[in-house]
Structures are given as structure tokens and as C-alpha cells.
Length: 339
Image (cartoon, rainbow, N blue to C red; front, side, top):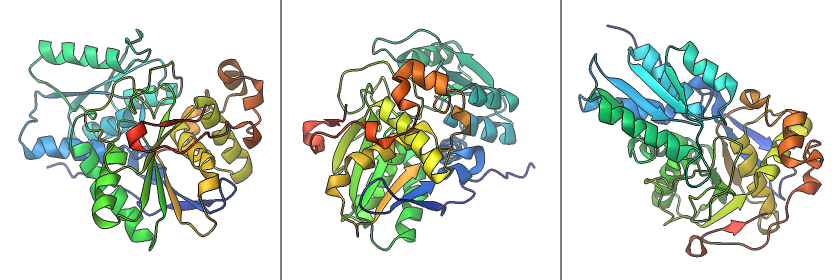
């Protein structure tokens, strides 16, 4: 019997301190030290384990999933180890490195090019998956957007490790992609650490918080279709960040702290910066960094790409160009738009 070496985590207690975003020190949880290089190894293992426990997978099974990149890499790793066939459906915003990594582990990669009715690609990716599973009864859609094993994985690992690392946590900032990390952490903290304020951060152009869609270029956060697992109840606030601010933040972190982090991290940290007038110096502020930035060298960290999509002033990584926040928001009023 094959030995299974892929576990949910490799190092779940790695944090770095960042100063200069707000009056307090920000503790950033570095998920890139997990196997597969991102936070997505947790739901990848969790969702496949759940199918195995139910006896749903056999030698004829093909797993299929929609991904902007990182989950695809994680699923390709787990499927390669366990001998499962896997198809990953991506779009043009997925980095070439992620695509090549998925293919290198033997998975099939399908790229959709037509935008959906909300201007993104998620609807198109899901439409393709529905066609595949309708035509092949041996194909199983993992469906990270509705699968309860996604947030459950983060409840049992991500949230628990954060809680055990810090005695007090005043603010926990979490990005909203599939919202698996956000929902898993929310459930855990509302039950065990209700005093912690949970701030959800999304990208402008995403529809998750109920706002109109718009074109987005950075994979990771944001959706063009609201995930079924998302429930705003229990969140203290929901804010949005424009992608130009996310890019600026990533480039500032690289040049001032030597941290090459992904676009989702830049979005969340730009959100923290927009809350700087509400955070006190003694507050404990924690954020989650899903992955590193080496997968974005041709986009976020490319001067030419940034200038083309967001303008020359965003190339320098100067925080003075970040959009000023307007007013605080809570879930009942949907969200604050920071640009």
C-alpha cells in the first residue's frame, strides 16, 4: 500500500511581523510554508479525505475542480500521490507557473477564455465542469465553493493555530476568495474567541459581498459568482480593496520588508492599511497570507504589466498612492468601497 506523505500542513505556526501598515504590529501568517506552497493544501486534503471516507472514489474516478491556480496545484499534488486522475479548469488570469506546475504533476489542465455574465471567468469554468460531469458519471466535482469540507479544514487547522499562537487577538483580517478560510475561521472564533473582530477583505469587482461585478486581473481573492458556503453573519465588517492598491502593497512589502507575497496578501494588507485610523498601537492584529509572490513575477512584480493595467505611479510601491478609505462598514450595509 502506498504511504501517504501529503498531510494538511507542513508548518502551521509561521508568522512574520510587519510594521508601517497601521499603529500596531501586524502578524502575518505565512501559509506558503505548507506543502504545495499555499493555504490551499488544507482544503485539498480535506475535500479528498471526505470523499474517501464516503467511499466515493475508485480506480475509474476523475476529480475535477475550478481554480485560479493555488488550489489546482494543491489538488494536483494530492491526486498524484494517491493515484487519482484530476482535471483542473483555469482561465487566462492563472499564472503560467501555476499552470505548468499542475501539468508537471500529471493533471489535465483546461483553460477557458470566455468571460461570464459578470465579467469574470468563474461562471464559465463552472459551466464547463457541469458539462463534463453530465457527460461522464465517473467524474466528480469537488466544488470548493459549496463543499463544507473546505471551511472545515480551516476551522480545524488555520483558525486553531492562530488561536493557540496568540493570547489576545483584537483584529483578524481575512481575504474572501472561495471564502473557505474566512468561513472556517469565523466559525472557530465566534465559538471560542468571540472578542476577536473579524474583518473580511475582498477585491473591488468581486460579487461576493453583493456589489456589481467588474473586470479583475489578479487571481486569488474575489469571485464573479457568490460561493454557496459564504455567510456574512458573524463578521464584524466587510471591506473591499481595489486591485491597484493590492499591487502597490505587494511591491512595497517586497522593497521595504524583503517579503515577496501574493496578490491576495497584498489585498488583505491594503485593507489593514485602510483601517489604520481605527487600530490602536497595543492592538494585536493578525492577517493570513495565502501564498508567496514568485508565482506572480510576470504580473504583480513586472513593471511593464503593472504600468499597463494600473498606471506608472503604481510601479514604485509607494504607499502614499493608496486610496484613502471612506467610512467603516458592517455586513448589514454590505461593504465599504475603498476606491
